[in-house]
Length: 384
Ligand code: NAP
Ligand code: GDD
Image 1 (cartoon, rainbow, N blue to C red):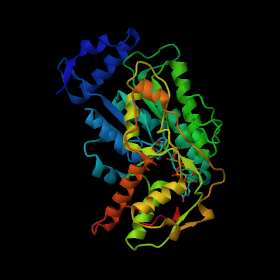
Image 2 (image 1 turned 30 degrees about the vertical axis):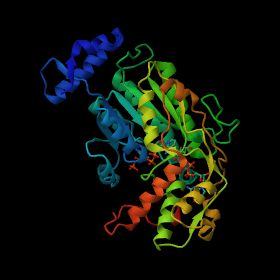
Image 3 (image 1 turned 180 degrees about the vertical axis):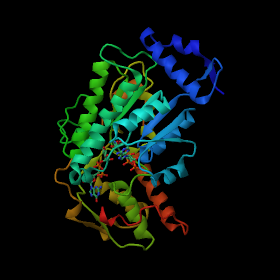
Image 4 (image 1 turned 180 degrees about the horizontal axis):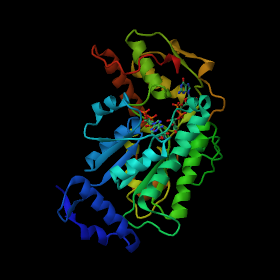
């Protein structure tokens, strides 16, 4: 086991934080029934939203770095856990819901994490108009509840600031906060003008994270991530809806694909690249916010052309525009300026847009062609 002595940990923290740290370490010992003076060096992470796209990639990434990974999972028999376990086996589960403050406090007390990644959210923008209040509660207030859980369990207050060994917090902020953009490309100082209840809720989560950093000295950071996709992307998002649609048409399971606004432009990257940036942000000397994106923008139309061409199809023969998939207020253009992340985190994307879409089309062709295809995979994206 990777171990070291308690004294080495204590040296790493300020006087005010030592007591909290020692309490946390002792709690781990008590829980594990250990009496030795040696304590694990393994870092422990708690991920909310672990059953989502980013949660699975982040769990894999942290496990590869030797972490003990816990996921916060809601519901008494969440069906997404089985899907997650196909990708990532070695994770531990803590029950909890971003709507329930007590459950988050219990989860922090039980897991005693070094790092918390708050990825849980209602993340599908159109749903946020249909369930605006729920979106505000989960995506916005959920961030406050998780910060409060960390603050309360760590004993942090206006007069008791955290030390170097405090729990570090990552908030999944979004380029949707830029909304109707005032400049292109967008960087960390670009003003926010969110265009959906989702964007508004994320903006609240972003500012409350900054506020806890400024009010209590917490190591709380936000990653302002632009759109990122993968073969694990939810079928409701446009990239996966298109690649699944292409696969269905190619295999003779459908003849057309209904879409909304083809002229919207996004900065699309690969999810596996973006979770690396999350961890890097929590491993800086001080907390700060970073824009993460590729710096290249493409229209939905370009994505469609590329995806159909990859399968040897003519998109114009199959794509139908349908007003049901347009939005009450659209974000027309997103394009990141990731200079700060490149210079300060050393972060670079490794998968280009063309390779990403090719990867997704090939994955969906393979998935839908399988005779033993799993019945929890989405095969009928027409109603989104
Ligand atoms: P996703 O696939 O939609 O996953 C969302 C996760 O949130 C799921 O694990 C879901 O769990 C969980 N969740 C929903 N309601 C919850 C609640 N009440 N309590 C606890 N967990 C709850 O999202 P993603 O693409 O991985 O994105 C991860 C995060 O990054 C989200 O916060 C998203 O808004 C943000 N973000 C994403 C992108 C992107 O392009 N992917 C860009 C910027 C920011 P269940 O299994 O229980 O439903
Ligand atoms: N979903 C969807 N379905 N989008 C469509 C469709 C369609 O049939 N037709 C056109 N679009 C356009 C949308 O209008 C939008 O402009 C663009 O495709 C991208 O839509 P989504 O893939 O649903 O993503 P998003 O940009 O709204 O939100 C995603 O990225 C955000 C970061 O900018 C989500 O992952 C958010 O959670 C994330 O914060």
